[in-house]
Length: 167
Image (cartoon, rainbow, N blue to C red; front, side):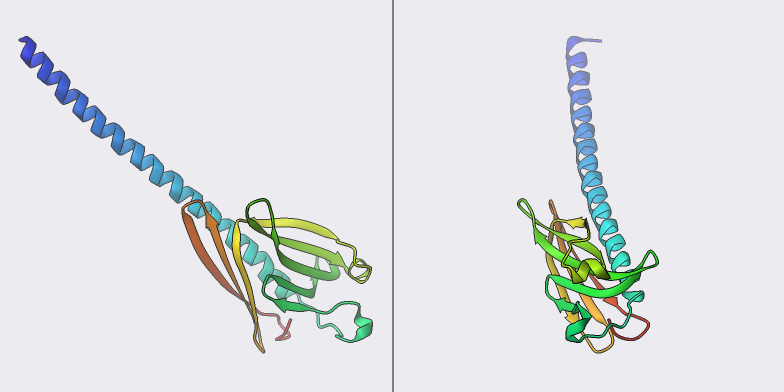
């Protein structure tokens, strides 16, 4: 083998390895973005499943002054009486501003806690939520969430229905 052949083989080998490493690098980047998007979507759907379960366990409540609680169906806030863990209480979903982004919070209060304006148990269920819209219809509630996670952005919509036909 001559020196020219060795140099030519080294150049071809270097070009092949460069192309291969670029391909592997771009594949890993796509895999990371896809994984992050799937995880964000799964956490959103788990939270919407919890919300749907709360709605399925809704309890009709007297909306008078003495009730101590009024259901709320507004943008950025959803609150109603439900049964969770065998206990009657108020569940609320709120969009709260955090450090640099908004997050969806689930608040569970027993009826005495709700009447006393006690915060109850607060759980941060979803981060980086830009939109939490609630639309009340005669037989159901429509919830729309829009999330932004890095380059990924997606919207989820769910209809919440209670067995009694109203929340």
